[in-house]
Amino acid sequence: MRALEKSPASLLVPFYFFLLGLLILFSLILLVQGVTGAGRNDSFTNMLFIMTGLTGLVSTFYMIRRYQVSVQKMLKERKTVVLTVEECSKCSYKAVRPFREGDYVYGYGEECPRCPKGSGDTGVENRMVITAIYLEGGRQEERY
Amino acid sequence: MQPLLFLGQDNTDIGYLINILYMAMFLVLVFWGEKIQTMIRLRDIEYALERLRLMRDESVKFTKEKLKKYGREDINRFLDNYLEFVTIPPVDMDPAGVVWKLDHIVKTAEDRVRGEIKQIIPNLDESQVLNIMNLFEASYALNYYYKVVRHYYILSKKTSSYILIIQLQAILPQVMMEAEAYLGALQAFSSGQPIGDGAGALVAARLMRGGELFDIERDNVYTVKNIQGRRVYFMKAKGPGGAVGTPGDALMKLSEKESFKMIFMVDAGLKLEGEKTGSIAEGVGAIIGGIGTEKYKIEEVATKKTIPLYGMIIKMSLKEAITPMTKDVLNGVEEAHQLLLKRIVEKSSEGDAVMVIGVGNTMGIAQ
Ligand SMILES: [Zn+2]
Image: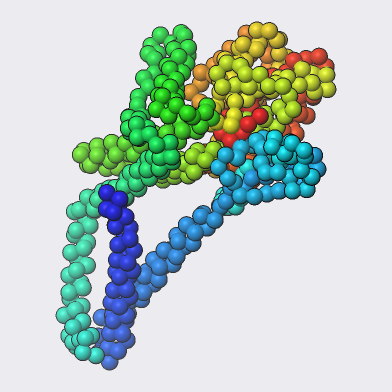
């Protein structure tokens, strides 16, 4: 089942580019045909060839560009990371680190690196308090 | 030049051919234009439907993967059952008292799911159970989107109703956006990260710091603090599990022994497109979402005792509401926090009792 689900997507992209390649080739052939056939004194057909060739080229490049943009967008969205802000209640030392499972706001984080270790350092005495958890680089709304 | 010759070896036949092709195309478009359009539109819908199905499967797979660590196979079967779980709303032909019936049914449904999860995985603590429930709800929502879109897709295909297809296609982008938001919520739900909807709860949590905490009714905590001579009750859902609490019930109970002079509510609200995330809107009324039962209770108390209801909304999009809290929302929380303290002092006088309710899903936010 899993293999089946994966195969269409991984096959589709090369196929898409194969088609685009064919389209480019075909457009180029038409274009060359149109240009070199200039002496054939059938200017209508030549014009048609050139126009079709150009349209094909422009549209393929447009499609490639669109694909690029969508890939870039996908990569950009992936770059978000959830951060945890910890603060020491004694010396107000503040640290930001990536979120780890089990963190929650107003829960206890790591030990404060600045404060000396207390006598009973098994407890929560020395640990910083998590004051915020937020998504860094959360996608800004597109501006229109 | 050999390979190029096939395209036209000095003859003008190709010109005629193209002309005939154009004519044929014109005729085809005249006679079957609508049919072709319908086919194209249906293809679009099919594509979206397929994506919805993948999203649903992805969500279920993710949830099951996350639950693997507990080593109970039964939970998978329960999740599959839960996707088809139905909650039947009460009859509303005679609307008097329908809210209490609905309240009862919703609580029963919640108890049932909560109880079953606890039964299958007994060593879970309360907040883990709630987070699993939230995960289940994301899958449930995705499954629901998929099923409804599929229903209309098949229906419009069967009836080949052009209008139905256009309508379906018109709402699809919005549906996909919402579905994607739910898919994005999975990560937050599974690891217990605070979500945007928790903005109201976070404001309350900040104000509650240092106070003595009391549990009240189902999933609520409150504390009483003295702010410039006013007795201020701060209440929120009990974290850090993904609970929304029952502020209505809690308010009803608290107002039996305390006569509040005013009620403040802070909640995350859906912004309109173009509005800034994290901006604050102040207003009047019971600012709380959900099915309306808690809202009803709060309004009942407020109306019976003529307590003014003031509210504050921290704005965000649906996606921001159910995915990890963004910096913009956090800034809004900070602003709402300061504003609320100012308003409490402004609107009340010394010796008054004031209620402040931080509404929202308190996942990842303790107190
Ligand atoms: Zn310290």
